Length: 173
Image 1 (cartoon, helix red, strand yellow):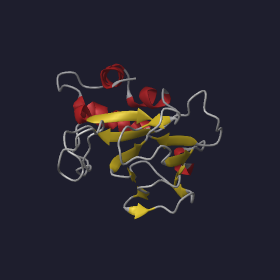
Image 2 (spheres, one colour; image 1 turned 90 degrees about the vertical axis):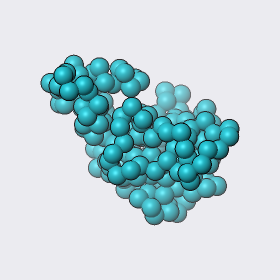
Image 3 (cartoon, rainbow, N blue to C red; image 1 turned 30 degrees about the vertical axis):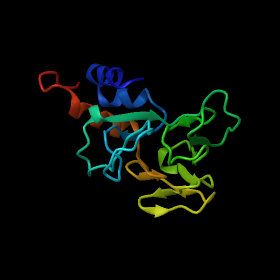
Image 4 (cartoon, rainbow, N blue to C red; image 1 turned 45 degrees about the vertical axis):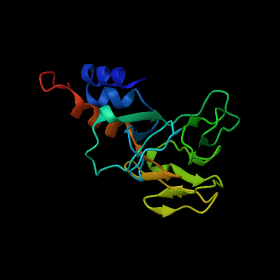
């Protein structure tokens, strides 16, 4: 579902119904013209910069569903990396082919994340993860994959971000 579809859904339904439609979290990543290091890099498909507290507008952010592909060989984890065979593909040179693993749980409070022996490392809230050590992750946590920063958000957080984007003349339900 792309941003216009998500916005339309948030406009049509209330928070509870919106949240019930998604049984998975999202990775929220800025979609801006400069990298986190403040300069443009030729050949980088995903240009990013750090999150500015919670001042990011949804129009500048891409929401990536954190879900397992039907053809995934793993039933207990979600793979994130640069190659097409990962469950979640992030096109950035600093992201390894297989960069990180997310470990789903029935409840979002039980999810985990680990570095998959990536070349450029994985950080959780500015703390570098030891390869293959699973760490608990909660909605709102910041994850850095190489130089790419993403925020782990739940459907409620997504709804709130989208509602802020709705025109004032069309309040959400």
